[in-house]
Length: 90
Image (tube, rainbow, N blue to C red; front, side):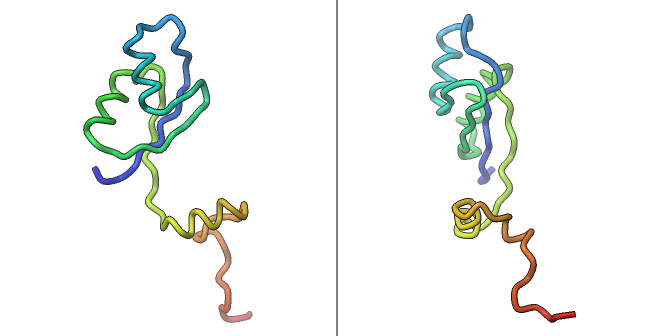
């Protein structure tokens, strides 16, 4: 469980008990459609389980941080989707 989870709020916290609203805020979610990447550990899994009817959860795919940041900064495709540079010309 050393990975990361992407948690996205899918429903409103209006008319839910204060404990659920506080849990959603503690996860770092600010409204419907907002997403956060959190560490995959028992504490976070417990929080997600408590508000599972308000959020969706996806496991983050491990990618090298530098390559991911670089592609996000430029808006390029991830390194795995780019053609090889310096390869053999056909």
